[in-house]
Amino acid sequence: MKRILIVEGDPSVREFLIQVFEKWNYEVDSTACGREAVGRARSSAYSLYLIAAALPDEPGIDLCRQLSALDGGTPIVVFSKENGNVTLAVEAGANAYVRTGSGLGSLLNQALSLIADTTAPKRTQQEA
Image (tube, rainbow, N blue to C red; front, side, top):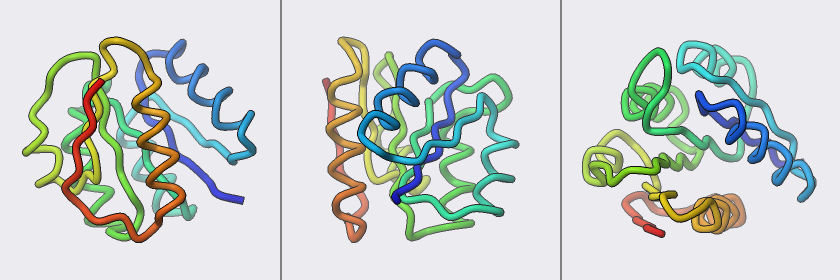
């Protein structure tokens, strides 16, 4: 079974994403903070990291950089309601930066696409 780590500070968004991916039979771990995410990535294998651009303890881009250095083969999607620095996210190791301002549909589509293609190349962008 494919496993996803969701890192999102907003409990309602985090719970929604957990429910959606579990409904599609993915195993899901989640946390609100970057420090815990790094610890989980060190102790478990994941098929995808979903990281909010803004986290309570550090910028999502910084976490992206850490996870990419730790586990460069696992796809990473950074997401935000706001327009963000796509180039910075990609340089930090993200496979995609998704703007979720009009909903989470594009985030879910991008995540499912990357999970299906574990050989996904870096430097893709998807905006809602």
